[in-house]
Length: 238
Length: 305
Image (cartoon, rainbow over all chains, first blue to last red; front, side, top):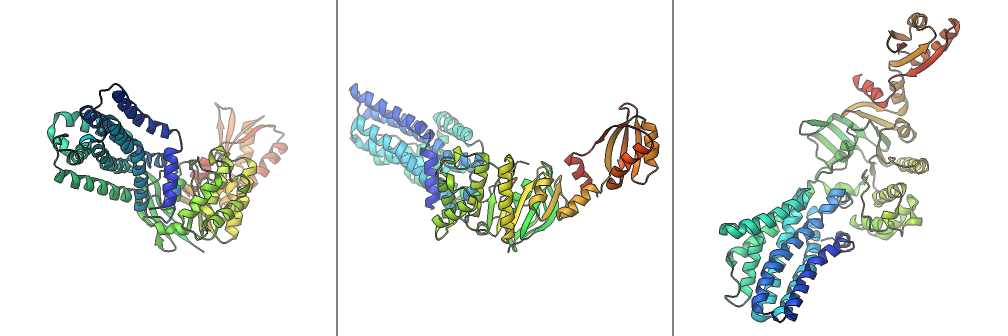
């Protein structure tokens, strides 16, 4: 970990207009939850649907994509990463630091709003609010690690990430049960399912499979990102 | 005192060869890397700075490979060509961050010293995005100097600078070289290079074309066949007089252009001869223009020899 890298990354993430983009989705979630509550239709049933489809199904992957690629992609694109890389600092520690900042952002913009929305709609009835927040956290970290790696290896990280989230997880995962085994979202749901009251949330992937997969993807993507950053070539003008 | 050694280095991208079997040694003092745009100067600097692996050959700093070696940055300061910095930071924050990233014992003092060196202390509390190009260049320089490196690599540092900024930077680079640092900067302008560099390496089309002090490079550029286009009151008579002298190798009557094309092999003698001949033969010279003075043709001549 490197405090200077963390400070620069944090400022680049939340110090500018991008922060507004990060705030928009959690705002929609909270506004929706508040509306349901005011309308008197908020209960464990509606909370499960909103948190499952919107919080874990949309907010977490999208913010994971924006934040995961955002902590490193723009710097590589515009070349300013050279000021971090021309230093005797281990590349893995740069990646770890950026992942830590991404995690902080995910907690702030996705996990806490999920928890709040859950509490707003159903208290912590059947453990839903905490369960979905915990699922959002592990899923969010895995997304960040994955999309950070994507940001290091490709200039088209956002597009590829969107294709993964929309096509693979949502579309193919929706029709082909087998695809769900290889879906960050389903692993997160598996964790949520194990934390809430039994029978409340259905999971396609067993916890015994989901946890190792989450760990392998998060750690593997981080180590690989460190290696790729070490071999990053900066293209010259000629 | 540090030395960069480039040993039979080639670098290609797919089918495109950017650097072709180049060997050079860059030692203390100021070295200018001279070449037209697209010659591979940037690629060479990236190779030396450890931001590009050689496809073949080796790049070392005092015997240690620079690629995949983060430790070399303790001795290298790099001033990249690209403008992008962390624009939301002030000059001070940016320089301080660079000092801290180097793990210096007293980063604050180092940042202050570096900003003083480049004379940017007056604007250190302004955000980088408010800086002019010349100011950005100087803060980039401060960031590169913050750990007092033995080697300083600058990629096209004079690009886009106004004359006053140019002079300031030239003085700074000269001073860095006089301090015993190994300074290398790239440029496509000979006049720029010869004002600053004690030693010049010329690259053209990815190949190492020439090497030496600026006098040697100048001589190479002057002592080459020069092409002239001449219009006079009697081209045919002038042609006869010119070919009789040893300073010309070829004279052609270009009927379409209604002009003479002359290849002069002895530049100094030819430029003295031409007006004298014109006077002796009572000819008027309407136009005398060098027809291949573009830098590219000068460089391509250097490569061919």
